[in-house]
Image (tube, rainbow, N blue to C red; front, side, top):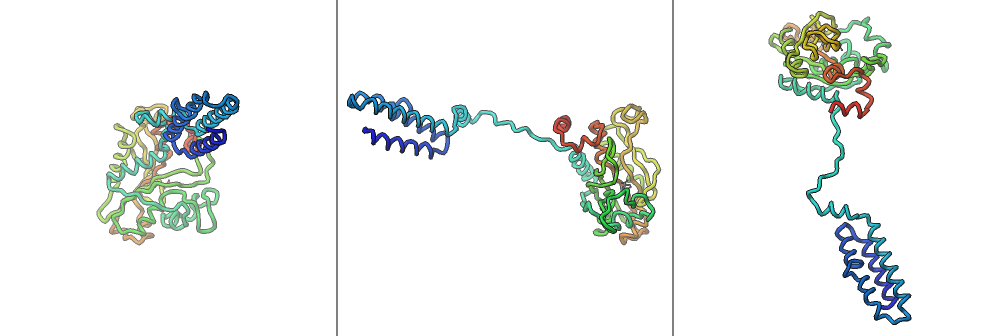
Length: 335
Ligand code: PHE
């Protein structure tokens, strides 16, 4: 091989290396050029046949070729370790770190699954509502504090960020004839200052059951008792306390047995044995009139509970703000 021929062979070898597409191709070229029986070591062995005066220049050129091919091979980035991994299909894969579902998503999904077992389907509604759906149809009097600009995010006269998921009751009844059996999880908004237990944006799950046969407060209680047990564990049940909501009559506030002390009294429930979680009641006949149902022919109940509230008691979260900070050190603890 002359020096000129060597330069041509070198250019060809470098082009081959540049074109190699995977670790196997790179390895094959390493064997072909710099391996023990490769063409470059063969040239070195054949040096003795090169005329003496040409030997130094030829030797230099061969060494330069070898160095360039080796650099080119290693710059392809297929390391020995990667080759081994490619070859060994039993090696464990790379661990990417699986995420976990956010506690609010988990409470929403679990609730939907529990109520699905009782025949409830999930309904949806917009977060930007009109006055009729959020207030008027829900029998809210004009002087009610929630109508006030200081309590609700208004955008003009007839557009607001819903203050509750209850407008979805109205949407569901306007769109369907009874029986209606829905839950609606979703975001709600109030002009609250954010602190450990309040947030201007939070989540509720609304429930509504309306039927042409007679529906009673006892039905409501049994459904919520089932939910309490499924969500919080055995030994957790419900109690009703009289309350007022414009759209239900009678109205109740719903407490769960404290899941920590099972009703005995502890720090979590402030020694009362009970934790307040929801509002509920029998749908007010005036609401039925607003959606075109005959109040004498149908009856039903509605309930609404706070998703954050359930998540906080279920997972022992002390500050509502932790739910929105996206700190994986907090979220990981709930995995
Ligand atoms: N919408 C009520 C609230 O936000 C809760 C509720 C829902 C009460 C359904 C009764 C029936 O406080």
